[in-house]
Image 1 (cartoon, rainbow, N blue to C red):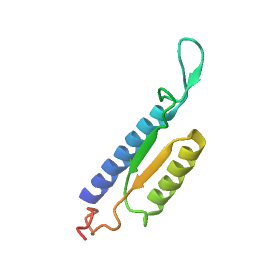
Image 2 (tube, rainbow, N blue to C red):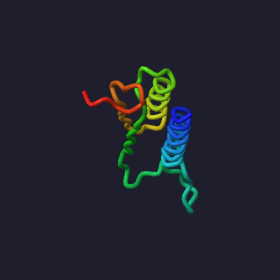
Image 3 (cartoon, rainbow, N blue to C red):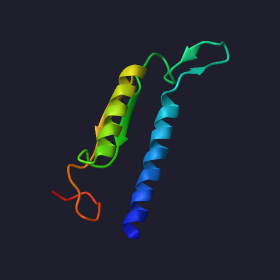
Image 4 (spheres, rainbow, N blue to C red):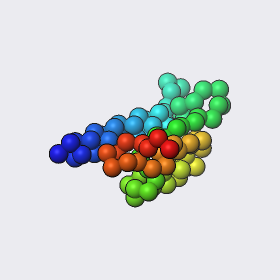
Length: 94
C-alpha cells in the first residue's frame, strides 16, 4: 500500500509541475491586444523538467513531450532525472 501511495504522490506532483510549466509558456494577450509568450524584453524562456528515471516508459514519453513543446514554443528545455532508483523508488547514491 505505501508504494501505491508514493506512486500517486509522484503522479500528482508531475501533473502539478507540468500544469505550471504549461501555464508559464502559454501565449497571453496584454491590454493592447498584442500577444506575448510570457517573457519580457525578447529574452528566451528556459524550463527545467525534473522527473523519474528515463527507464520508465511514462517518464520517457514525458521527456519527449517536453522537448517537442520546447521546440514549438521556442523555449529552451533541460530534463533532469536520476540514472537509476532502488526498490523503494528513491534515487540511488551512485
